[in-house]
Image 1: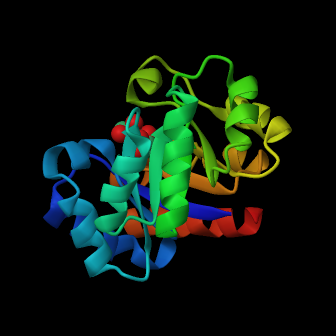
Image 2: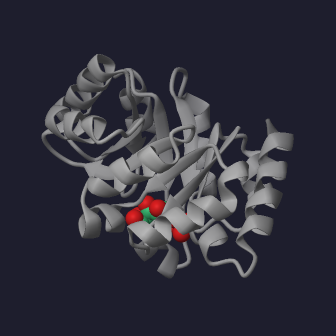
Length: 211
Ligand SMILES: O=C([C@H](O)CO)[C@H](O)[C@H](O)COP(=O)(O)O
């Protein structure tokens, strides 16, 4: 089981500072969608250059032009790129084909997918690397989480790794770990904690124990 730090509400210098603080405790650093909107793929490039030993995920949430956008994120140095589960099959398949050429990985974000089990089963046949259940900021504001969705996809996904994101905190991590995802994604649970290295170190411990 791995731990991914999601960076969403920061600029590039702040992102570098944050990663420096928790670097020993994380496996993947995510350049979140708001950061890409504000800073462009330059954020991916600068973080990969500054921390070459960490895997960098570009949270592009691709909805169209899968192949082209994966190519651009790959050129910037991303190791993993996100595509939306609600997008057309051809978009996801195009993203996977380009990722194979570039030796990169694709994560499908299942945010807003209604028929979660059925879609996870389909997407799993496209050769994607991760399938991620996700309660986004707007869902979190309405009090939702994705714990049940994780159990649902675990029942049907045979090839891809499973991941979970959205509002996970140190206190809720044990419940998440019980469902045994391959990857846990945490943003505010680390970046909003008064002691970020402590939160990340404790989370790493739990994630390692869960492996
Ligand atoms: O993907 C995300 C969200 O849609 C904003 O772009 C976050 O990275 C993801 O939800 C993890 O962040 P937290 O919910 O703060 O843990």
